[in-house]
Image (tube, rainbow, N blue to C red):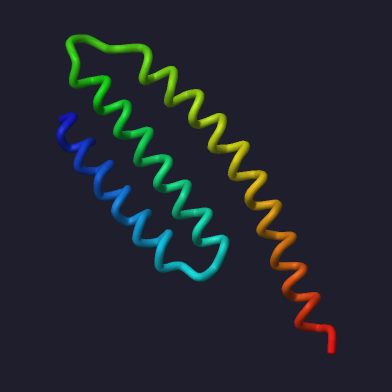
Length: 94
């Protein structure tokens, strides 16, 4: 079962990297980074299950990573909104 999770993590990471490098829109790049972070979290949890028993350290790292990812996403989205507003303002000026 953990092999399925490892394959899913690899597929998510691949899709996220393609989206990150091919997207021109900043919002799509932020979403691709979030998918990449989710793939890494899934990979860590799957690797924690492959060892004998359950290792609590990767689970703690994933929980910490989720908190950091949410706060970073909020900051990046605020910067993205500001950048789009500035871009619109520049286009409106003659």
